[in-house]
Image 1 (cartoon, rainbow, N blue to C red):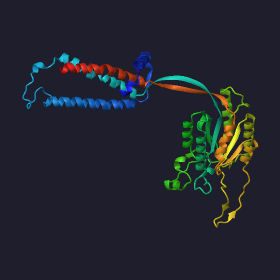
Image 2 (cartoon, helix red, strand yellow):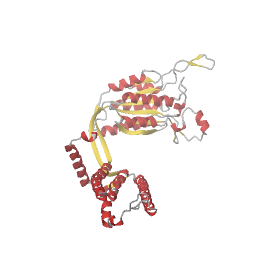
Image 3 (cartoon, rainbow, N blue to C red):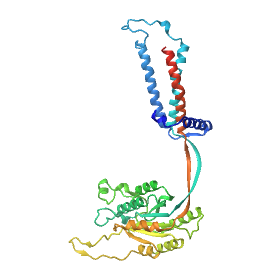
Length: 399
């Protein structure tokens, strides 16, 4: 009653009018169902319960549980007061009519929908970014002083960065690479939640088939569930990936009717240990980035996390030359962020936030229009008619 009091009579009337209009305009021949198995199972259970109830009533009458006289009452009810068969049928109609709303609910459980194609276009001010995560064999080695693999450190850094960028309207695509590029989120999307989940579920390493026992997997630096077996993978070749990403940006610029070489706010974020094989080829890839104004950044999973020591505890010298990949990124105006630096992700966030936004058209396509609510409305409408009719019939049955 408290809920009904919040709605005026006009609002309730409007809801029913709208529901009736939707029913009148609904083309039942075009309806399809995606959960028919579930509806059949629920329907089977209901039929079984109804049959069980009928059998119980028949057994009760057979053994005298529901006769018109009781020995202990001391009164005999005359059989002449029994209703005629037709009259009894009229009185039981409201009960039988309950099958109508029950059937409507079963159709709603079957998840009815209309197969249609609908495009919704809107414009947003956004920065466009492709995230590339290294999942080559070198990422399986342990990150210094953590007991975790570089791959796990890379994933955690990536997820933390996405948390920081949440709500910034970034249009993002996500590819992983080893010897070849593989899409996780192939095209650009703005949905933070979906993108985060896809990023979390992405594999940590691509490599060849490994027939290890569970014991051997437990000794490995990453869980078996995070290893994706793909023939020919395990190396670290970046140029093929850069070429695919360039094409992705070019295709997007054409869709958005933007200049290939003057678009704002476009960047590539690479998460890698920079142990790249195809050093000579990646120069050409970064030159194409420069022509298009695509800003490259890298979160560098640097293995040198402080001084290094031998087994006897003596400090050893290591090669601290800047990896070639980092040099190329800085040469083209990009930035390098060390994952071992606690402030690195914040600086990466700020650098990307400095990029100018572009006005982007977002197209949302809908292929299914759910209409289960129409069947729920039918059930409610039927109950509104049946319940008063049942109360009237009850008055006639027990005057």
